Length: 106
Image 1 (cartoon, helix red, strand yellow):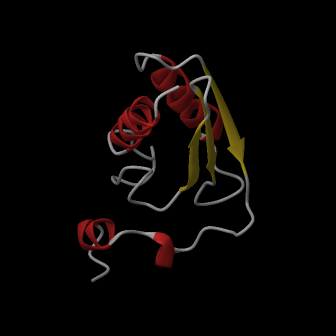
Image 2: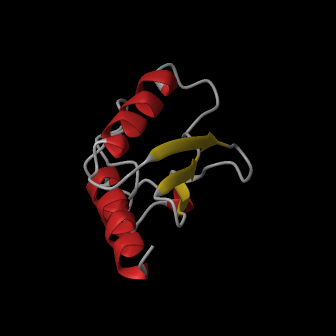
Image 3: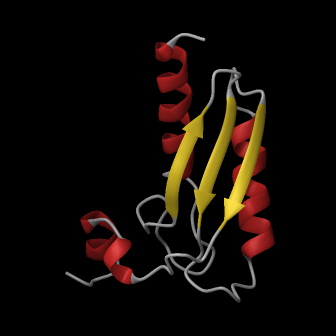
C-alpha cells in the first residue's frame, strides 16, 4: 500500500474525529485530547487508541460505536478497531488550546 493512501486515510480519520463531539462537553474528541493514537496498516485497517474524560462515562458505548461506524465509511478503510484505555488517565492538560478557549479555560 502506498504511503500516500495511508496518510490520506489517517487525515480523513482525524477530520472525522474533529467532527465527533463528546456528548457531555461541546468540544470534539480530538481537541479534547481523547485520541491517543491512530494507526493505519498496509491493509487499510485502522486502529484508534483513545480514552474518555471519565471511566464511568454513561455515553461511552454510543461514542465508541459512532466513531467506529463513521470510520468504517471512509473510502478505502477495510476494518476498524477501537482500543479504549485509561492509562494514562485523561486530564484537561491533554486538551488543545482551541478546546481550552472554547470551554473558557484560557
